[in-house]
Length: 116
Image (cartoon, rainbow, N blue to C red; front, side, top):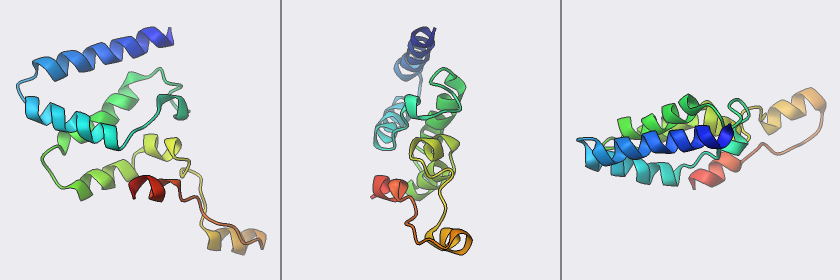
């Protein structure tokens, strides 16, 4: 069933990308989606099967295709998909961990490395 859902999602995207009147916007959105990637297998809330989760994420790029890159980063940063994908969803700062456990640890920096 998962393969069929993924195939359906890809079919819908292809139809929109090929037949939409705003071809430039669609192509820029696709390029942006290739830069800020979310891997379906890494997102636990969907199990890779819920198209709406990923379509909403992709719509961020369609909406901001001609806008400010900072606005795109802001929306992607607060996106639950990116939080799960790069494991910063439940990450805690080093200061928080030291205050509560007495141990010095480093915060998760996966997202920062991804953006750089």
